[in-house]
Length: 421
Image (cartoon, rainbow, N blue to C red; front, side, top):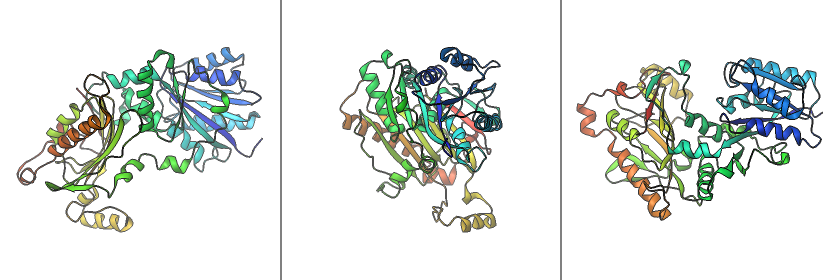
């Protein structure tokens, strides 16, 4: 056996077809000795029983179960123990970890890429996300996400769209499953959205999760350094290239980078003035259906908190990640800046700014494609205008008092979810 064993992490929503894929891989291993680790959220690990039944295996034969929790959080210690025990007890060529449908794959991958005893025995080969393609289409058409304010530690009803996007953005390989239930136009649109969300991932269309194991196992697609950079690339892509408008020197109208795929495009909005909390909340609740994803850091007037914004489909999640450095006491602020010479700093506003990446489709309200350039330019120009109009004016900044607590988090770690109407 090699000095380290490759690991494939299977992710995807509940019912997407992960267990079916795992059974398929076991039944068509083609000489590979596979070990599997299965996580289920119930008291009884149904997935493990299904794998055993479908593959004529004993549940104890190379299958380690983790039940009643998700791999990315409370069972990390159990996961570490399980994979070390597998390595000590069995000879195998490849480990497949099937995570629960409500867990994030990146924290699982980090366990195998840190300095832990697990990393010494294993290397991540790929994160494979199984996509329920019809569900993906339906999710971005609408989802009943209630508005709420929550402590992340107590959260139990996370919007499906948030988790689905994170599973996709972490993937090195995406299996678009159940494609037999989709129209060609829907598949084309799905492909374009996936290309915008995760351009480095390979996409494979499947029915009943049937795929050549050689396209899933031993593909060596995971790059921990590249994946650590994920999420910063789009923001950096437009950094420093914007053209300041004559009417507002504090707003960066960063130019758009055209996509070649089916009417999906992205742009970056940057501003050195805060958002008015009421106007910005109204904008987030009225985002056009063409906006499928937005993510970044926002500055909202009336709070010293830096806010992280993540919108996927109809839900908009905002998290208070901590105070802006510019709002700290002078001694603490100067010490922080001396330790962070690369920190972007404005003479008047310090580190406070908005930097928001938006991914949109060239659809009108009927869902039909129009002329790509005209429609996507229209979506971008209208949204840029609304974003700019939502910023605090010079007069408001000097005179008005703001109440961000009505819609936005104002304490460290606090989150709010707004529902797109």
